[in-house]
Image 1: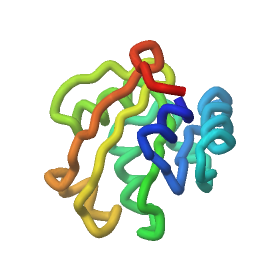
Image 2: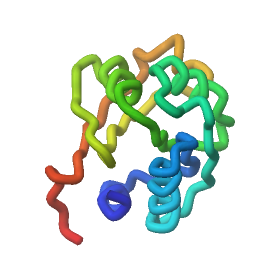
Image 3: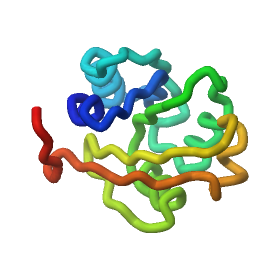
Length: 131
Protein backbone atom coordinates (compact mmCIF):
# COMPACT_ATOMS: atom_id res chain seq x y z
CA UNK A 1 0.00 0.00 0.00
CA UNK A 2 2.95 2.32 0.54
CA UNK A 3 3.91 1.83 -3.11
CA UNK A 4 0.36 2.71 -4.07
CA UNK A 5 0.52 5.85 -1.94
CA UNK A 6 3.79 6.83 -3.62
CA UNK A 7 2.14 6.30 -7.00
CA UNK A 8 -0.86 8.45 -5.95
CA UNK A 9 1.52 11.12 -4.59
CA UNK A 10 0.03 10.74 -1.11
CA UNK A 11 3.00 11.70 1.02
CA UNK A 12 2.20 12.16 4.69
CA UNK A 13 4.73 14.16 6.65
CA UNK A 14 3.37 12.72 9.90
CA UNK A 15 1.93 9.34 10.90
CA UNK A 16 -0.20 9.09 14.03
CA UNK A 17 -0.52 5.42 15.00
CA UNK A 18 -2.36 3.39 17.58
CA UNK A 19 -0.20 1.79 20.26
CA UNK A 20 -1.29 -1.69 19.17
CA UNK A 21 1.61 -3.83 17.95
CA UNK A 22 0.00 -4.46 14.54
CA UNK A 23 -0.65 -0.75 14.03
CA UNK A 24 2.93 0.13 14.97
CA UNK A 25 4.25 -2.51 12.57
CA UNK A 26 2.09 -0.96 9.84
CA UNK A 27 3.42 2.50 10.67
CA UNK A 28 7.02 1.21 10.52
CA UNK A 29 6.38 -0.35 7.11
CA UNK A 30 4.87 2.84 5.72
CA UNK A 31 7.64 4.95 7.19
CA UNK A 32 10.30 2.80 5.56
CA UNK A 33 8.58 2.47 2.16
CA UNK A 34 7.17 5.93 1.49
CA UNK A 35 9.27 8.06 -0.84
CA UNK A 36 9.49 10.80 1.81
CA UNK A 37 9.80 9.09 5.24
CA UNK A 38 7.37 10.82 7.61
CA UNK A 39 7.71 11.50 11.30
CA UNK A 40 5.85 8.97 13.41
CA UNK A 41 4.08 9.27 16.74
CA UNK A 42 2.22 6.65 18.81
CA UNK A 43 -1.10 7.78 20.25
CA UNK A 44 -2.22 5.56 23.14
CA UNK A 45 -5.82 6.79 22.86
CA UNK A 46 -6.17 5.46 19.29
CA UNK A 47 -6.56 1.87 20.49
CA UNK A 48 -10.24 1.06 19.71
CA UNK A 49 -11.00 4.80 19.72
CA UNK A 50 -14.26 6.38 18.61
CA UNK A 51 -14.10 9.01 15.82
CA UNK A 52 -14.01 11.99 18.18
CA UNK A 53 -10.67 10.81 19.64
CA UNK A 54 -9.09 10.75 16.16
CA UNK A 55 -10.50 14.23 15.42
CA UNK A 56 -9.28 15.56 18.74
CA UNK A 57 -5.74 14.39 17.97
CA UNK A 58 -5.89 15.79 14.44
CA UNK A 59 -6.98 19.17 15.79
CA UNK A 60 -3.71 19.36 17.77
CA UNK A 61 -1.40 18.68 14.82
CA UNK A 62 1.06 21.53 14.21
CA UNK A 63 0.43 23.35 10.94
CA UNK A 64 3.91 22.46 9.67
CA UNK A 65 2.48 19.04 8.71
CA UNK A 66 0.55 19.34 5.45
CA UNK A 67 -0.35 15.65 5.01
CA UNK A 68 -1.11 13.31 7.88
CA UNK A 69 -1.79 9.59 8.06
CA UNK A 70 -3.83 8.01 10.85
CA UNK A 71 -3.43 4.32 11.65
CA UNK A 72 -6.18 3.00 13.86
CA UNK A 73 -8.89 0.43 14.38
CA UNK A 74 -12.45 -0.41 13.49
CA UNK A 75 -15.16 0.32 14.17
CA UNK A 76 -13.88 3.82 15.03
CA UNK A 77 -11.88 4.37 11.84
CA UNK A 78 -14.71 3.14 9.61
CA UNK A 79 -17.17 5.41 11.42
CA UNK A 80 -14.77 8.36 11.10
CA UNK A 81 -14.48 7.83 7.35
CA UNK A 82 -18.27 7.59 7.10
CA UNK A 83 -18.74 10.84 9.03
CA UNK A 84 -16.15 12.72 6.97
CA UNK A 85 -17.10 11.28 3.57
CA UNK A 86 -20.84 11.45 4.16
CA UNK A 87 -21.29 7.82 3.11
CA UNK A 88 -20.28 4.38 4.32
CA UNK A 89 -17.05 2.79 3.04
CA UNK A 90 -15.79 -0.54 4.37
CA UNK A 91 -12.29 -0.16 5.78
CA UNK A 92 -10.64 -3.59 5.96
CA UNK A 93 -7.06 -4.02 7.17
CA UNK A 94 -4.62 -1.72 5.30
CA UNK A 95 -7.39 0.25 3.55
CA UNK A 96 -6.60 3.89 2.86
CA UNK A 97 -9.10 6.74 2.89
CA UNK A 98 -7.87 10.10 1.63
CA UNK A 99 -9.27 13.57 2.20
CA UNK A 100 -8.08 17.00 1.12
CA UNK A 101 -8.73 20.06 3.22
CA UNK A 102 -9.04 23.66 2.17
CA UNK A 103 -8.54 24.83 5.77
CA UNK A 104 -5.49 26.77 6.87
CA UNK A 105 -4.98 24.76 10.04
CA UNK A 106 -5.78 21.40 11.62
CA UNK A 107 -7.58 22.90 14.62
CA UNK A 108 -10.67 23.73 12.53
CA UNK A 109 -11.34 20.15 11.43
CA UNK A 110 -13.50 18.92 14.33
CA UNK A 111 -15.93 21.82 14.12
CA UNK A 112 -15.88 22.57 10.38
CA UNK A 113 -15.83 19.57 8.07
CA UNK A 114 -17.42 21.40 5.15
CA UNK A 115 -13.97 22.26 3.77
CA UNK A 116 -13.02 18.57 3.37
CA UNK A 117 -12.97 16.91 -0.03
CA UNK A 118 -13.24 13.12 -0.06
CA UNK A 119 -10.69 11.73 -2.52
CA UNK A 120 -11.51 8.04 -2.17
CA UNK A 121 -10.93 4.74 -0.42
CA UNK A 122 -8.47 2.16 -1.64
CA UNK A 123 -8.43 -1.43 -0.39
CA UNK A 124 -5.46 -3.77 -0.93
CA UNK A 125 -7.44 -6.44 -2.78
CA UNK A 126 -9.06 -3.93 -5.13
CA UNK A 127 -6.16 -1.78 -6.33
CA UNK A 128 -4.43 -2.22 -9.62
CA UNK A 129 -1.59 0.10 -10.48
CA UNK A 130 1.67 -0.09 -12.40
CA UNK A 131 4.44 -1.13 -10.07
